[in-house]
Image 1: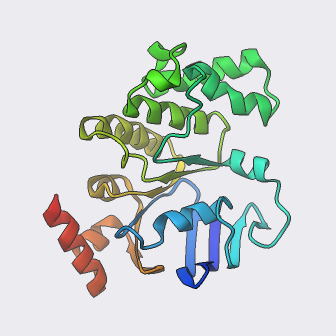
Image 2 (image 1 turned 180 degrees about the vertical axis):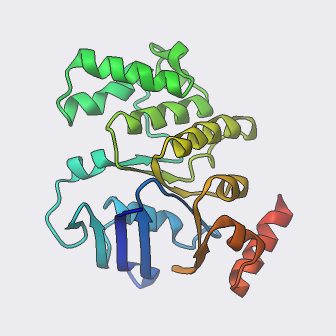
Length: 246
């Protein structure tokens, strides 16, 4: 597998608070990487630095031969290739489902309306939302909104999808429908970086699990190793706590 995204010596500080401390991480094409760890460990900040929603303090982020952290970057173009799915959906509530999915391809990529709608309908069918094309986003359930948000990210034909705790704002009964869409994407070979508290998903679907604590990567490896034979004491303590809670 080829490296698609490389994070090198990445730091992020908010004033005197050091949130990321020397992160080194490589994401390969068609790889699913789950990032786990307690709240406040730096997981979401790392994800947001990858597509420059947060500006790194120092270090490099290499994507398609460009150091995003240190070279001029066309942010619209970057974010079209590095799709982001947020925990709070970030849909346009006043638009219907179809318009939410077609807006960026038309505005950013210059796709004509008819072609954008054909693609959007196909994507919405793949996430089980083809019955809701003309429903306003604000009338959807949380699980439905997140499936539309995934279709919207896919409409830009991204090289990688970044998921920031995509199920954390959902009612428990809606979590499964979103995770099922993500499982399908993984099977289709989509490169995915997923910040998640869903340990079952991380264990079953990931090629690699990354455990973060206090702004550093403590341990990473195949799910079978990280979950069954963690090497680091901090990893053992975290897994014992979260798995017991569940």
